[in-house]
Length: 587
Image 1: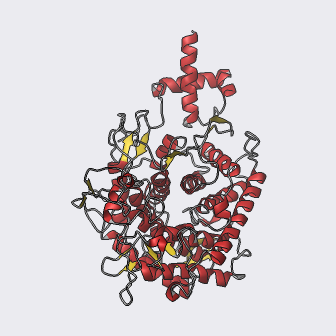
Image 2 (image 1 turned 180 degrees about the vertical axis):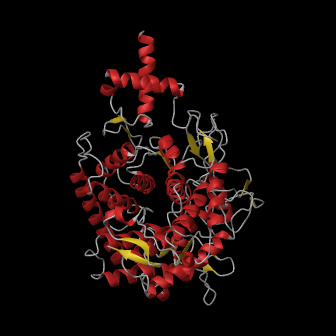
């Protein structure tokens, strides 16, 4: 008898962790006669399922086995429930706690970080936005997700580098507080429990969010004051924010998602708090970050953006970059390659900033027109590089799978700065594909494109499942083939050559091989995929909801929907919608 009790208890806890029982939230509920009966019957009906993905169409039960896309599956839920407690930031454990629907933490976090971090912050932002979309839905009980993100947000603070404007990567995580604060302020869920001295009431969550956002704004001010390109270094780039204080005079594609896009959302969420003293000045500052970076990174022939540029090609921080030149009259300021994920962050940043400009009533402004023109060009350039067979995109966008790096002798000549001595082919990369997919889908929802990218987006989304989703051996899934990291310069002498992005020490992709230590889900593809999946599900599973694919199509639409794709009557805060055939801001 004890043996069976242990079996049922273990099975129940597994069900509790993955949120299969929406009404039985604690072991006390289980021990009640009604709860015990319902639980046992459910286990019998499910064959005592041991994990979320069991029985999901197209999901491989084999560890490392390929999955196949199945229409109607809500992959956002599958991936969140599979990986919320078990993913990594590069190579560091970053999983959140697993909570029951009453706010009890049933499994501790696996997060080895001691402060807010870009990667788990991205995942948290994606999950809390999925919570916002699915709250009140019969499709899933999102309360466990909410409490997991609430605890993470209340426990961890911004790094010292972030607060002092030295790293926009360290500020990006605060984006999660916008949606979290809204949910807490609205009382969408009951107060969370105090855990290890961390209060998780709605009021404390709002207070924490306000504190983190204020600190982030201070960080942006310090970056603008202390870590921006000077006119004496390069006049055309004056005022451009360094990617990090240690990357003097450098602007990266990635940084536009981390910095300007964050400030843009701050301007709509808390318009009284600005960097320059006026909202108009701040919007000009946001736009200038894009115009500077665009002017030095955009290649009209390739229709893509280089990863980064330096305003001082003769400077020490860019000394190892491939391709740069300080020769008078023929200077080359940009790095050598078009890296997929960096391109994706810039692409998504444009959509996010244009969304915030709509909310701020700036859709007719010159700044809006400038960024919209960039978006049209970049969207077309990225679409042209989509792999026709899989719908995915390559690590290096200017090359296909036939391109091979045979050696990477980093500038220092040290073999330790590469992860392999074997040739490496360009490969289809999951995080870039997920970011591109999320951006096309969100841009379509907001009516930002002049071209219909429905076919591109659908093919890409299905490609993620077919190419990058594999079984984890427990009924759930992993997302693989994610480049763990990449950058320019720094202690690893990263030169930004094609060989670096394929063989550099920090660029090694996650693996589909279950026996490999690289068989895991990295947070950048996790977060990006959840963003994409939530957009896909509201557009193509729950119906188009009157949201059209292109700007022109939306002009014929007379319905009004909020940013979550729900009828206007369900939202009290300002939102973008369609009314009488025109895009409007409804308050």
